[in-house]
Structures are given as C-alpha cells and as structure tokens.
Image (cartoon, rainbow, N blue to C red; front, side):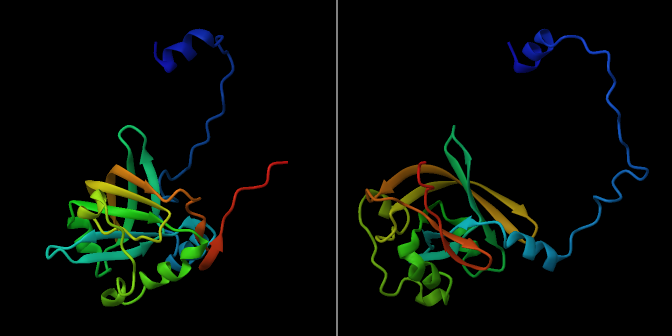
Length: 197
C-alpha cells in the first residue's frame, strides 16, 4: 500500500476549507534573481565541508582542486556530487575523467586545502600519495583520513557550474576521525561533535 493511499484511508473526512492565497501576478516575484553579491554574502553563512578532488588526465598525470560544494546524493546506489566552476583550469579534466576521488579533510589538513586552491602546476609538489588498488583509478592523498573513489555517473550543467555526480566504488579510511574542516564566512573553521550532556 502506498503512503498516499494509507494516509487517505486513515484520515477522517474534512469539511474545513483552507484559505488559498494567490498572487495577483503569478511568477512575477520568482522571475527576479537575487543580486550576485547578495547571494554570495548569504552563502558565506552556509558552512561547507572542505575537500580535495583528484583524478588523472589523459597523460596519466595527477590533477586536482579544492572543493566545498560537495554533498551525498543517494544511498542506493551510493552517489555523491561535487559542483565545479566551469572557469576552473581543472574543470574539463575532472568532468572528463572516468573516475575521481574525493578526500574529506580535517583541521590538520588546512595547508593541503590551500595548496590545492593554489597554482595548478604546483598542487602535487611535495604531496604524499598513497598506493593500493584505488590509486590506479585516481590519485590518493595519503594525509586525508577518508578517501571516496568514484566512477563518473553523470555530468549536469547548472548555471556557471557543472555538477559532477559520482558512484562511490571504494572508501579508504585511515582509522582516525575524518572531516571537520569547513569553509564558513570566507575562512576555515573546525567542526567537532557536541559533547553529550
């Protein structure tokens, strides 16, 4: 039985009529965009996880960038997404790669996050890479406590960004708490669990 039919059968009949509020000009308000600077200021209040996304380019060279627009998408199948600026020099490589890895960063990884937000050609300099089966598909940053390696599932154009959807094929954990480095109010912040009371 569907949830809709269950609710229909169990709910008593209602004789009350809810008031309906209609705009005199439907769609007129929603047709306007919020100004870019106002939207940017509002989004600065939205704390976001800091990650590094890596892949190999056509020559087998490692490529990557720092990304904070990352989210889980589905449990079955296991999907996650990362939003990529179409103006990024790493955009085309990541969206064209068959596989990529998302590294969840912790407070100890601030320098790594800054490095992968810096000059493209210097991002992998003096960075330790992990071996193992997943390293054949995408570069694995050894200092990240949690690495999620994905097969490209979908690529969706959205405004000035591209939504890269990955199907998670492997999760490599170093056995210590992962994550906790967030971007909030245009700077790094450290998230931690609230103490039980």
